[in-house]
Length: 303
Image (tube, rainbow, N blue to C red; front, top):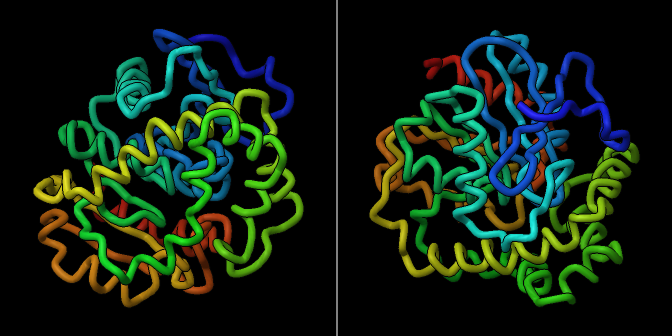
């Protein structure tokens, strides 16, 4: 374990959460941890950090688990090395984290773009994940259809951010912040203090470049792989739960029914849970409902 978190003065604090850094081969990864017991790994979404799980982390710890929430490469208070960001680098960042913490197997919760790394880990290293929960993201085995087109119009930012130099300028200007936390993705406005924290996160010096690299070198290539059916024959070996907000514009009820119509094409033990009165940022909009849903699943499949 590397340097303590005390040198970071702009990050939020939560009582009982401990902060530290893990040294990777080319930079440092910040992690927030709380609790003792069976480990639960939490991978945040785009433009967010460990703080996305501010309500879930205490619930996990209170139930006798150990919550481990890293800031992914270039996001939050983790460093963005000079090396280009790739799916393999994000993958190996998490593997290195688990190895350095001495964790052979963990439960995993992921949201949004954190789920891209999560499903790769779950498919390629199933022995290291006792169960997994993916929030607001469909399984990579899904087939694309015309039903998805209306929701995808709100994802123009992925292509825009991927454009060299334009992406980081859009991010730094605040255009993307206003787009993400708009009615396109939310059912109601988040509290001012929550929005202020996310805005501060997106203004961290390394993030505009990290966002551009992430979209260009991870998100768009993975989207192409999913559309091409590269994961269609893969199955999740571990119990898997998928959580969506009922008002997620990208995945309305009709789409979810089609995606999960035959869950055996995803894995042998697959659950779909829909949280009412929430959109894409379901963890922020309905934290208590998400915590109840996650904890019930974790307790059922406790390693």
